[in-house]
Amino acid sequence: MASATITFPIVITTESLDSLLSHQTLINHFQSSLPTVSASLCSPIRQSYDVSPSSSLLLMPSWSSSPSLPYLGVKLVTYFPQNSALNLPGVHASYVLFSSTTGQTLATMDGTALTLYRTSCVSALASRILSRNDSQVLVMIGAGALAPHLIRAHLAARPSLKKVIMWNRTVEKARNLAEKMQESVAFEGVCFESNGCLDEVVGMGDIVSCATNSEVPLVKGKTLKAGAHLDLVGSFKHSMKECDDEAIRRGRVFVDNEAALVEAGELVGAFERGVIGKADVCGMLVELIKEDKAGRRSCEEITVFKSVGSAVVDILAAQLVYETHMRQNQ
Image (cartoon, rainbow, N blue to C red):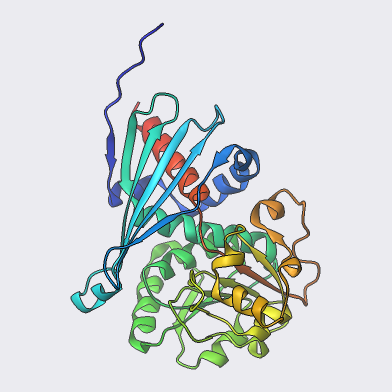
């Protein structure tokens, strides 16, 4: 038997990851790869351990049986919400990529940055399919670490966007983010502003993207304009909800994967209250990409996309980072 080459793990820092990835390339990678590799990927239910009454450790593994994706990966995440009092992020993560052929460690990378990219690009890919082609106004609700990524990803997916309006409970955070984004040379021709009136802001959005930890509905369905696309990113447990039942009732609802049906507070609550049934959810992202399920059917209908994330998109994002690094360093 021929001996395998011994590989030495590479460490990909946040700065390196930023130079290797763009939102546009990752959106395109998901669009081309998800339909072909999803069936070959095994992604067990994430494991979550309470390490204190308020903090958690999460393990998210995934591996592929496809020769075109010869990897095994694990994301390790810590959730310490009390860190905000220390002026530290509440979530930290590392991603470890192994060869699924030999089991050798290939790379470790910043799992937090990887998650920000993959989460925003999943939303943007759904928007590319579900939002109106002539969408001009993006409303960003929340001004945390994910917000600038979601803005960049949505702008990449919908070049027609001309204005981004930001809202945050802390008005100054929204204002600071708007000023920071406006200073970027990458967004020539796009106007960035903040607005303190939430209901007014929501009514302006052709695309409304939410990335908050809110446990009270922020988006009221009655305020959504005809033809709007609502992107819900923040909730990942039953107590969390970023929109009310009316938004779910008015919209055609799509999800990133089946886990959203049992994890997302907006959907679980709507099912329990009989607003919609699980059978009323119109499809998953892979089905939209493959056109197995119809996306937007008219310029007047409201579409809703709820994502909770998955190890599948983690490993695909890690693949793109690793293979781009190896190609650039041959």
